[in-house]
Image (tube, rainbow, N blue to C red; front, side, top):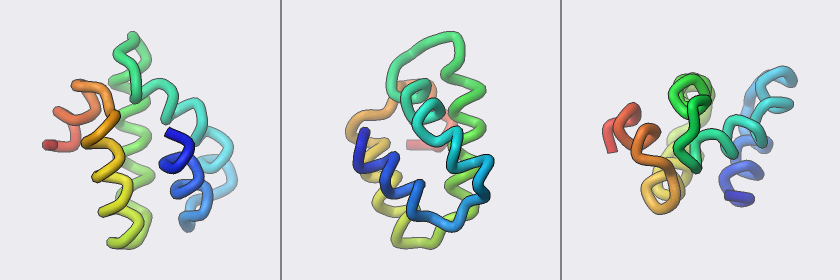
Length: 75
């Protein structure tokens, strides 16, 4: 989880998005009522990163992400 947060904080995201990264990641790792909204937010963030960052993020998500997130990302 920490690696995914660092990866996104190093990505070319806006300051507002970077400020929400830890909360978004926390909400997509466990199934909660906030997971679907957080998954949409993360999906939007991932669309803005480079291919190598995206590939690493997807690998991490595949290993530790919630079922909702995996389903939304087609994993």
